[in-house]
Amino acid sequence: MSRYRGPRVKITRLLGPLPGLTVKRSARRDPPGEHGSARSFALKRKPKKYTLRLQEKQKVRYNYGLTEKDLVKYVSRARRAKTPTGDTLLELLECRLDASMFRSGYAPSIRAARQMISHGHVQRSDKGSVHTVNIPSYEWKPTSTEQFLLKDVPVNLRRFSATDSRRRSRSRINPLLIVEYYSRT
Image (cartoon, rainbow, N blue to C red):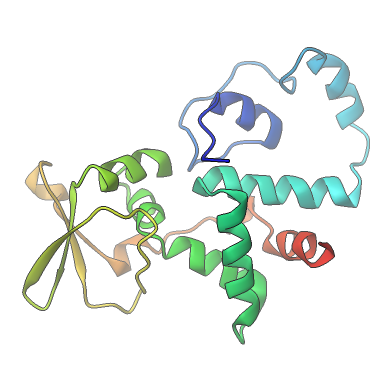
């Protein structure tokens, strides 16, 4: 299955605010669906452990715009690392070019940053050479010397580097629950 292209506000009503998914907010408080108000009564109960893990996984998938297959690959890469798996998973996801552009403030959402990159508006400059990057999942490290240039934007927004994109709010995502979800399967 490809990327999620459905209504994004429904996802935020179900999982809570996801800044990488959309900037829109819904006035409704109930979960989406035909029986949303009845479900909101059921949601007041303590959720099961599996439900919590599944919701955390879905938050990451929708927030970063990943497919299930992509997320499984990132989790397996994080497991192979010597550092804690949850922290490594979030670091791998934040090293993506689309997430870095969003965190730097050059796009209102990760989805918009992904579109800018795939349309060829981003160039990579490293040691004097300049190349167009059109792969949103391009991975780059915070210690990297390369810089990215944005074409067709105002001059004061033209350059960003790895140090600009390290603002991250970890309060919304619990990586331990994601690792536990995939350790059961």
